[in-house]
Structure formats: structure tokens, C-alpha cells
Length: 112
Image 1 (cartoon, rainbow, N blue to C red):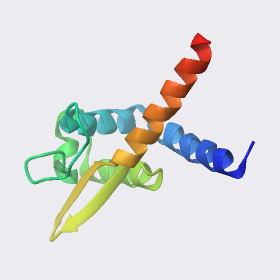
Image 2 (cartoon, rainbow, N blue to C red; image 1 turned 120 degrees about the horizontal axis):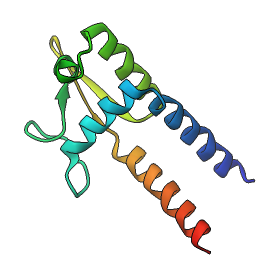
Image 3 (cartoon, helix red, strand yellow; image 1 turned 120 degrees about the vertical axis):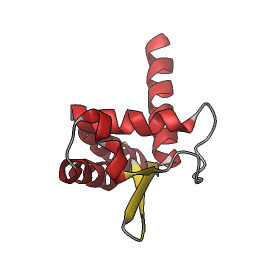
């Protein structure tokens, strides 16, 4: 296995580990819903969400949401940006592309 492939496997492993927690997966999916069918483009009305708002319908306290956001960010799944007291986050398009490539390649291999 080449070094590039091993790095890719290591990164995917971090992503899957972060998404293995049900609450983190819910947060990630909630953010993905804002992406629409095309590429994610951060904008005021688009996919950016305030970290404080994410836990509302998931019944999570802000400190727990912050912890999950940190784990998702460290795995390369989210971007986070501070605007005064507001923390906004959005899904990394690069991570989505990497996951899509992985699953498409896996499907292609399984179908062969």
C-alpha cells in the first residue's frame, strides 16, 4: 500500500471514529441537510449553523455540543469559525468528497 493510500486510510479511520458516536452523527447529518444537492458553499443563509443552535432539537446542552463539534472538527469533517460570541460551523466539502470517493470505490469493487 502506498503512503498516499495509508494516509487516506488513516484520515478515513478518524472520520469513521468521530461519526461512530450517535450524537456526533446526528449533528453531522443535521449540517449535511443544509448542503443541498450541490457542493456546499458557506453563506449567511446557507449551511453555516451556530453551534449553540445545533443542540436544541437534539436535547444536548451547549457544552456537550461543543465537545462533539471539536471531535468532528479534529477528524476533518467540519470547519468552525468564531464571529464574536457566536461559533459557526459547516461541513467540510473536502471530507464529503473523500467519503463519497471511498464509498463509490468500495461499491465499484464489490460490484466487480
